[in-house]
Length: 120
Image 1 (cartoon, rainbow, N blue to C red):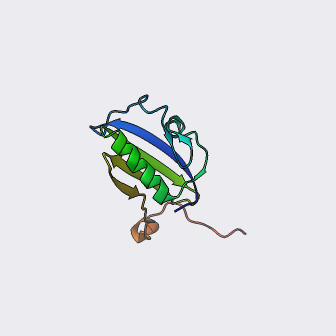
Image 2 (image 1 turned 90 degrees about the horizontal axis):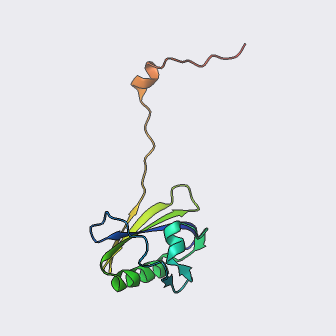
Image 3 (image 1 turned 120 degrees about the vertical axis):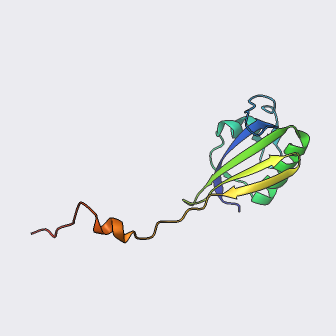
C-alpha cells in the first residue's frame, strides 16, 4: 500500500528482546531520505512510502546489519490499518492487526441493570 502512514522503528539485538539505541542513527533509507534516527523516534510525520519500496529497503538494511532485528510498526490512515514488519538478516514477516466485534450476548442483555425508558 502507498498511503500516508506513521512509522516507528525499533532495533533489537539478535535475541529479539533487547533494544539497541545508537548503532544506526547515521543511516538513511535511500528512496525516502529518511534518517533511521527519525524512524526510531517516530518523528517522521505521515509518510507516503510504498510497501514494495519499504520492504526492499528494510531487507537491505537487515542484510547490512545481520545481527539486529528490525521491528517496523505502521499506523495508517484508516482506523484498522495497524501492522508490524519484522526483519532479520534478509528475512521478514509481517503481522496485521485483526479484530472482530463481539456478537450480541443475550444473557448479558437479559441481566442488564439499566433499562432505557421513553421520556414522558
